[in-house]
Length: 405
Ligand code: ASP
Ligand code: MG
Image 1: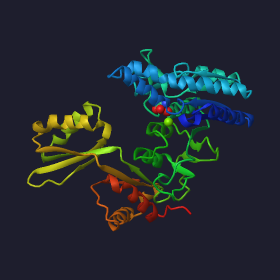
Image 2: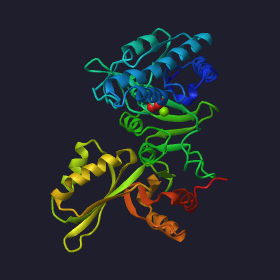
Image 3: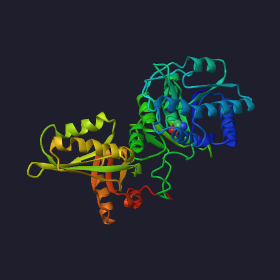
Image 4: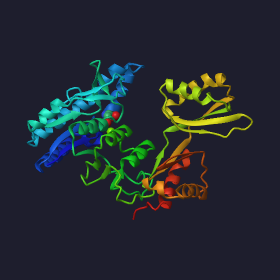
């Protein structure tokens, strides 16, 4: 008998029929002798609808009230799933994030979990109930209701699994697992039966849209095995687990793409200590997350610094750069939001030379220009023109032998 946390995303609880089929699955898991804790997202696109409503009544999105509003979405799901479980003959009770003991900091709309006190969930389990917990929400140390950032129900599920010592955290979604590339871009993409935490972190960070990055970090830190699978087919999906040292790692496991970022170039920057520090301090103080950074070798004591930021942060980032431009003696600030990033990820890259060369050759053979490059020990990313990204992904998928039958 195992303790299983089952998290159901928005499409999995999108309407009454989906909710009944979720309840039926939970009932079958129970009948197989397992204890189950359910975590739910808001139905369908309900969170987006609520944000739209908020924007219709206020231009400023007051963070405390926005959190109060958005957590309503998950409350609806948890109550309905709990009722549907009752109709399947499974005793259950729903709990808000606060009732489930999810204590966060006070950073509204992107709160971090400080502590887990799931006493009521433990009691419910001990009483033979299936607890149904509202994802994405918690309560702050100031006793206000908070949310964990978009997609945060994954974090709720992993945090509960870690705190309760669950055997596995199952993430149910509308795809059958993690793929070697986005199946909408690459028809021959294959489902990966198993991915290491490190690989999944890189996949999630470079455009893989299945799991929220923070939830993977959390799962890795607490060694919670994740199983990403479909609530439409219920077939086994992708296991995200610790690297298995007895197994030969794939050189490249996945090709990812991301067109959500833009590039900023600060040119004519004096090549002196402290210049980059000043620039990136200004960005950090405005809460802007910088991704890839490239600085050219200087010529006559002058250099250029390029970096990428999320498109949603572009305007704020330009303001920040313009502000420090004169202070650091830079010539100009330019930006480009027609870029995209293609990455290859694979744990076996560490011990296989030639991966970088093959990536660059594949792009150049197809006449695709590389504008920026960055690497980690198990990832290589290239920035390209946005309109070349899809074909680049397809060519790389073929070149690294990932095409399925
Ligand atoms: N409902 C929230 C969102 O749409 C949380 C989640 O789905 O994980 O972001
Ligand atoms: Mg989600």
